[in-house]
Image (cartoon, rainbow, N blue to C red):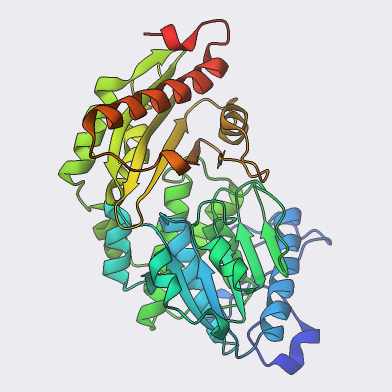
Length: 427
């Protein structure tokens, strides 16, 4: 049977997958479990595809645990909370969770508090009709949170969402936490699947699909679009599969049977806006390069242009003799009168761990939560400005405030890059 078959048959769970008939035969190890995709035609089911022992058994275990959790929450309403600036990995996985949860009569609303500012994210949502909603803190005040029985964190652990504290204060329990980033703190979740060694959360959700939690059907337009979104998320978080591992390739191979290549190409062809190009230009102008690190502050940005920062970091890391780029700026949300320092790190240096680097550079807040973290080749940080937010109508004051934050961030970064030098004096 499959995981989405009748509930009464759950005890007889069997996890197998239909293979590609062109694959060479592989010796079957007794500790490995075959996975079967219920959506494949019978003609391709004569041999089996086997995942590695660790990934196979863990995918089975976590799928069983997630199904038990979903069974315990039948007929619930849930909030799926994404980071303030959700990326393709988060968006696609949230949509997949929603489709899985629907089979248990669980209604999910996918929400984020920030903005979709990256051109590819905007195109992804528009071209696939991905059901995501923007809830600001003001919007949250008008919502009846008592109608929700749980919330879910996907591709984040709440440290990059303004919505988390309000939802927790409303007494809504955390039902599921599914992420591929390192643990950022203690969260009491009913179901938890956190795998830092996995390159994309989309890989984890594709494994859920492979074990039968969702039966993809190529004749269903919504399924094709969701598979396309997952492929985009996987591709995005593995740097176009160049940093993918075996399980990521296995997930991509599975999705290749369902996704729409033309639709994905249309998403990837989205053009950069002039404002994004302006931020990239600023990063080039302001960068300093030391010990193969390129560090650039880009000043103030509108909230809607926040995703220009990682795009600038992507660009700077391609410079000759640069293996790591860090770009940061002060992002201003005029609606909420909120300012926050946001930065992105990109690296091609195999021995540099972005998660460790960012955590060591910026440390933790008063509650013990780190200001940032990362994964292989990429990382980010967000530092609230608190009492110093706003008052930027006074141009000299705004300039002075930026100069202070710019100097402090450079000092913290260069302390690791060039520990023997005085960062403030660096040119």
